[in-house]
Image (tube, rainbow, N blue to C red; front, side):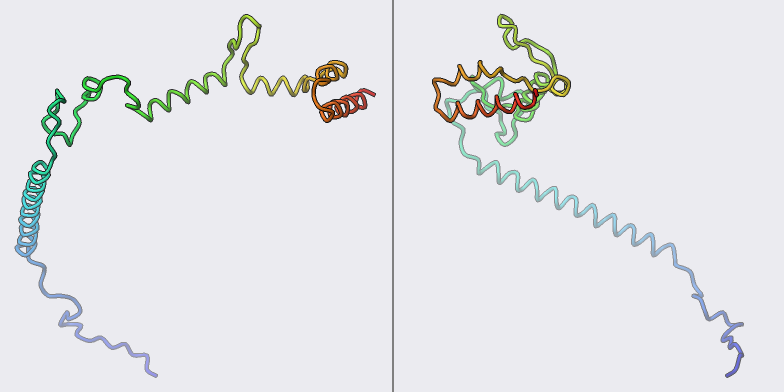
Amino acid sequence: MSDEIKRDNTTDHGSFEHQDLKAAAIIYFLGTLVVVTVVCMFGLRGLYAYLDRREKASQPAVNPLVTNVPEDTRHVPPGYPQAVFPSPKLEEDERGQLNGIKTAEEKTLYSYGWVDEKAGTVRIPIERAMDLLVQRGLPVRPQGAAGEDTTANTGTTKTATAKIGAVTQGEKK
C-alpha cells in the first residue's frame, strides 16, 4: 500500500462551482411567487362570493308573521334573541348558566350559613365538619332511645339496634 495522497486538479479549482447564483433568477422566482399568490387570492374571493350568492338564493322564505327579522338570517346579530323572542327564554348561555350554578353550589358547600334559623340548624364547610368528626367522633345514640324508636318497625331493626348497642357497651368497658 502506498501512503501517497493524490491531489487532483489542485491548480484548476475543480472542486467547487465556478459561477455564483444570479440575482435576476431569484427576483424572477419571487415575482412569480407573488403573482401566483395574488391570482389565487382573487380566485378564492370570487369562489366564496359565488357560493355566498348561491346560499342566499337557496334560503327559505321567512314567515311573514315574524317581525324584526335581520336581513341575513344565516348570521344572528348581537342582542337579537333577547329583543325578539318572547319569554320564557330557555337557555341563552348554557356555559354561563352552568358556571353560575357550580359557583353557587361551591359557595354553599364551603361557607357558613343557616339551613333553618328557627330550628337552629346551621351549615358549616366540609373541611370544618371533617375536622370536628375527627376531634369528637361520630355521634352515638343511647341504647334506650334506639330501642324505643324501633319498636314499631320489624324485628330485624330491633336486632340491628341491639347489636349496635352491644358493640358500644363493649367499647365502653
